[in-house]
Amino acid sequence: MIRKRQSRLSKSQSPLTPAKSAETSNHLEEDNPSGQPQVYSVSGLTRDIRAIMEAAFDSVWIEGEISNFRTVASGHSYFVLKDDKAQIRCVLFKGHRAGIKFQPADGDQVLMFGRISIYDARGEYQVIAESLEPRGLGALQKAYEQLKEKLDKEGLFSKENKKPLPVFPWKVGVVTSSTGAAVRDILNIIRRRNPKVSVLLCPAKVQGEGAAEEIARGIEELDRRDDIEVIIVGRGGGSLEDLWAFNEVVVARAIFASQTPVVSAVGHEIDFTIADFVADLRAPTPSAAAELTVPLLQDTVKEIRSLNEALVTTLQKKLEYYRDLLKRLMDRRFFHQPKEIFNPQVQRLDDFHARLIRGLEQSLVSHQQRLQDKIHRLFQASPEKHIQHMEENRMMLEKRMLHIIQSQIRFKKGRFEGILKNLNAINPLAILERGYSICSKDEESLKNTEGINPGDNIKIRLSRGGLNCKVEKIIE
Image (cartoon, rainbow, N blue to C red; front, side, top):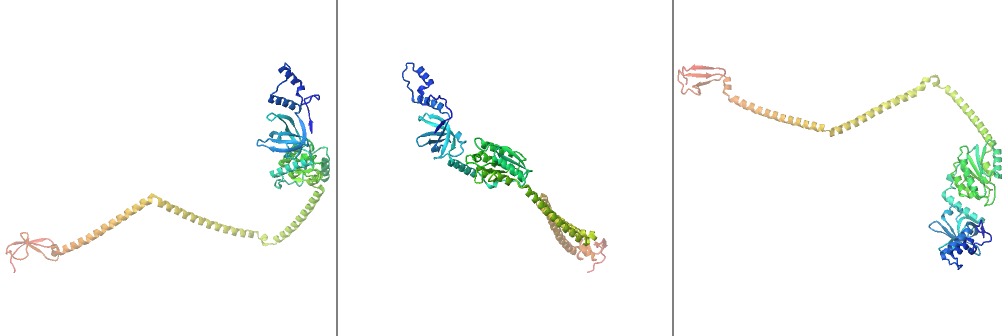
């Protein structure tokens, strides 16, 4: 089934009769003034037919079944759209695929919008598709399951990303239709449960073209406000087509990106949308969302009173306990002799002082030992030690030489004294010391009287001094 949105040809003209076109007739008359039949080239005829076809069917809606769907490496998709009597070749270029809400497959019933064109290389007419929409509940359900699986793989449904709802919210943001029953139910229930809670409504379309974008924009605007503590997104019940705005990717990503907790309340309890899985909390109905978001003020006040009474009771018991404890403490000795309170602390202070002194001494000894070790290692490596060692060796050598010299002197002295003793033993002067004397004549010592005559002059040498004597008589 083909429905033309608009046509540039009049109703009396057929898009397949180019000979009746005024422009074509004038062209023939100008190119062929003799009235002979016009001869076309294949490419020229194809080009003219394409111009007529594109002008006549520049925007059409076509309903049919997809067959032979394939996507090539360039990202363009090619398929056949058919019914029980005919088929048309179609192409979906990569630039238009981003706007498709589902993944087309063979057997899908779709409503396609595009324009008619002719592929010159094969001389075949085709439809250049610009959008595809699933037809029927089965196709919508398939698109829903495909999107759900895709977002689940991206982690938009994970529990780790769910944010807790505030316990006592004071301002609630609502994204829904301003004229629907959902907003009235939410306002009535919130007002009944806690009239002190404020509600900020961000009106948005919840059905039809552009609804998903308005819902996402409303979520983003409320999330930017600092006073909104929780956001309710929803609408009343309806068919799958009616609820489809809440199955759009733009709504799912807006909910996931929101820093403010989001409660999804779409349709009835049996209705599930993509928004329900992405939201931080899913409410079966808008009324239930208001009940789950705002606690009863009476229950809260009752709980506060109960807690207050329990707190007062606990404080009274604590007060009685500490009063008794104070009375018992007042009877203790240290209240009468408060100085004794400080005795354990003074003792502990003495212990700490003694430990500190011991620690300092040990630390000082340890540091001294380490210092001595370093000095010793430094002294071992210092050239002064080698100089001192050489000086000590020199002094030792001097001592040894002095000892040797002294030993030699003592030895020589002993020998000298021995020789001197021997010399003294045979020294004539030593004999003279014992009372002996030496007689000489003419400088020759006299051993006997031979050659001596009376009247001769002789010299007598004594130990001290000498005598000049004259011989008077020779005694034999």
